[in-house]
Length: 514
Image (cartoon, rainbow, N blue to C red; front, side):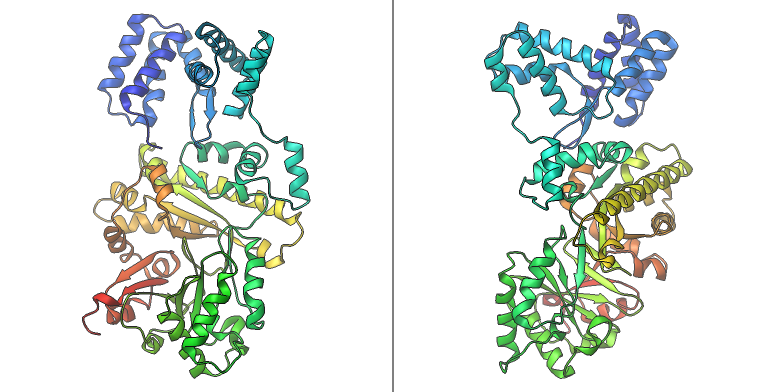
């Protein structure tokens, strides 16, 4: 959702100044100061409070109390309370008169001010409106306006029984109410951070990559079962190293593998290893056969899997037999790389949670570089507390292995290019490295946030080419450890880049050397 226009924000501030007891002259003075200031939309309320404090301290105190009247909406935004929304909602959904709607709106607003709630959401407001409707004898209208949901007790009972068919919306609301609380919840609704898939917070780890050594008949079922514990479909490691039996040719086996995985009902990343290491060291069979199968899968019109080639040196790229289309290559030369639909991480095969951070918003709210990094480190600490809370919850849930519970946390940086350029126009790469280091010092797997719907929510637009150019300026450590998908149209260039990069996408259709 886009930020409100500055004019609309100033109008809301003027209304709140009036409600606070400011005179017309004082309100006009505040409006003039706001219109002439160069403050960002997020800073207008703070600026208004400063101006009003000089003009009318009593009104300023009341005005600041409105900050507590912030509603956690179903759009996952934290917005100023507006009793007009109650009136509009009643008139739209029921046949109540405008006079009654306005009276109820005013009384509910007064009650909310008295309660000083930590988590004021639209459900609570609706409950309070419904009580008022019954107080005034409007039972039929109450029935029209009532929200049909599920008690928290019932949700907790179903969670304990591992019966999650309650629906994503109910689980999401449960987690916002009971588990994702405090500052982390506020930061999410204020679009400073994004807690991915909040509906799974109490029930699943975010992602996992796994090698299956079982027979082909069992692998898809095992993957389907593993998917029940993860938000993102599990990545299958070294698919070509598994014990695929039968006398069929590699092409026929590749087609069979795709059909087998179709029974999971989900499309997933499948790694094709061109090296012999990790859990599949003793399951490689004949090297020639595994390479043939990898190429057959790579060239197959796959419907159920997205193949990614895994190598431990640039020389293994020469084993690839694909001439057209795009190909993803992940680098295992220095440490393990795991690829998922949202990107890649290094050093880990699983994440307990992925959290996006809006660096652009932090920049807008900071007066200087020092303040920016103070805010960043404080936010990262809040994210750490959140992921540890999730770990504690899942430790009490049966079915998770020790490895899954020890999964790391992923931080997805949004606006890294814009923030780095703004803080140091002559050397943005230095700032980018410092930001990445700040997250890695707190043991995060750090990636670039490229999820379009989250970027839209954050209001961030960046050039992929500019980002790639910036990240190529990072030092060797950060280039290898920062999860970013680099792009090239040349196999030769990919071989040169792979020494220090975790994941490369090559567009072979544009490689004129082939």
